[in-house]
Length: 361
Image (cartoon, rainbow, N blue to C red; front, side):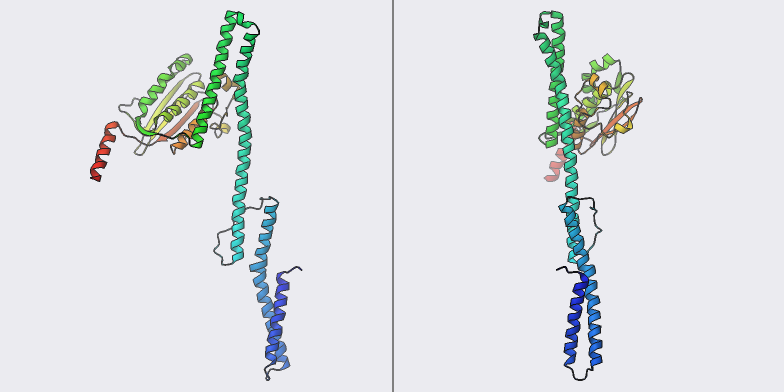
C-alpha cells in the first residue's frame, strides 16, 4: 500500500471531521446544518493542515532522502552539491543534510582514490622505465665483453666505463627514490639549526666548479654581501636543495650565467637561483615538480639526472613549511626561489639563551 501526503491528509481529515461531528451531536442545541458545517470545516481544515505538513515537511524530504540513497547505491555522485547551511528544526532536513555531507565526503574520497590510482600506475611505469634504461645499458656492455670484446683492451676500457656510468646512474636513481620516500613518510626528521646560508652557497658553487668550467658559464652571487646571512633550517636538506637547483640551472644553460641572490627581510630570507638558460614553457610550469617529469625528455636524457631532483626539493621545502616558486620565460631563463626564517649567529644564539635563563631565574 502506497502512502502519500494526499492520502494521509484525506484519512486524517475524514477522521477529525467524523469525530468532531460525533462530539457535537451529543449537544442538544446543535442542529443538523450546524453539524454538517462543523464537520466540513474540521475536515477541510485538518486536510489542508495535514497535507501541508506532510507534503512540505515530511514526504518531500523523505523523497529527497530516497533519491540520494538510490544514487548512492548506484555509485552515482553526479548530484553531489553541498546543501545550503540551515539551522532548520525539521529532523528530516537535518538527516538529508547529513546524507549530503556524507555523499560529498565519499565523492571526494573516490576522486582522491582515482587520482592516487592513476598516479600509482604512472609512477610504476616511470620507475620501471627509469630503472630499465641503466640496467639494460650495463647488461649490454657486460654481455658484449663476455662475448669476446674483453680481449680488446681499448674496447674493454671503453665498455667498462660506460657500464660503470650506467650503474652510477642506477645508484643515484635508487638513492633519490629512497630519499623521496623517507621524506614523504616522515621517516627522515628535519634537524633545524642556525647556519650561514652565504657560506653554504659558496660550498655548493665550489662543488660544481668542474661542471661550470666545462660549460664555460659564469656563476656568482648577485651582489657583494658584507656580512653573513643566518637562517634557521635543516642545513643538510637545504644544501641538497641548493645543489639540485644549481645543478639544474647549469644543466639547462648552454651559455650565459647563473646567479644566486638573497633578499633579507625582517621575518625571513628569500633565496633565489636565476639562470639564462632554455626556460620552461608555460604549459609545463605546473608539472616540473612531479616525479620523473621532464620538459624535453630527449634532451633531458642526454643531460643525465634522475628526474627526481625538483620533486625532492619540493618535499624538503614543504617540510620547512615553505615552497619553491618558479618564474620562467622560454629562451630567456628561469628564476627559482624559496623562503627560510631568519637565524642567529652563534654569539646571538648564546646571548638569547643567557637572556632566557635570566628571565627564568
